[in-house]
Amino acid sequence: MLNVACGGTIHQDLYSIADGSFLQHNPKRSREEAHHVVDVVSGSFLEKRTGCTSLPVNSFHHQAVHRLGDGTRVSATSSDGVVETIERKASPWYSVQWHPETMVNCLHSSTLFAAFIKHTKELNYDTY
Image (cartoon, rainbow, N blue to C red; front, side, top):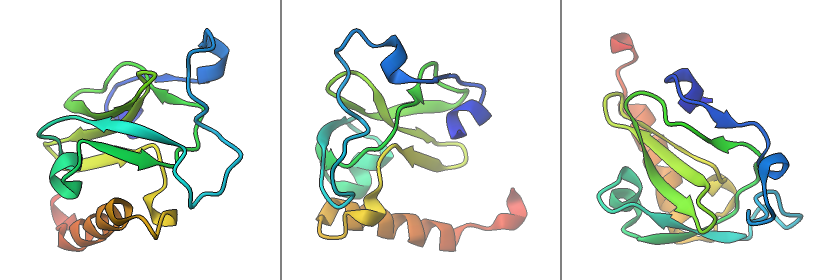
């Protein structure tokens, strides 16, 4: 949704365009469990917040970023090339395709979710 708001596009349904090479991004597993790993882009907001170059995640989606919106950049991808995180420096904001709020026993997820809460508290909504 955020990518589209910036003029980008999405794959409406990964599995309708897939040649069988996509990971299962909508697994029938617990939300608390990681389902696959994402590769984090060096220097990205995600790397700065977590200190990691790869992260186990629990993504549940059938849509994904196709063409990036204006002012956005990729922060992480899965091994099948699906964009899992984007960020926008001008605002600043970031978006993840997984649910760190449900992976409470995972340090990087807790760190990322805490950073989100801290950041939203610091925002001055009068400037937007």
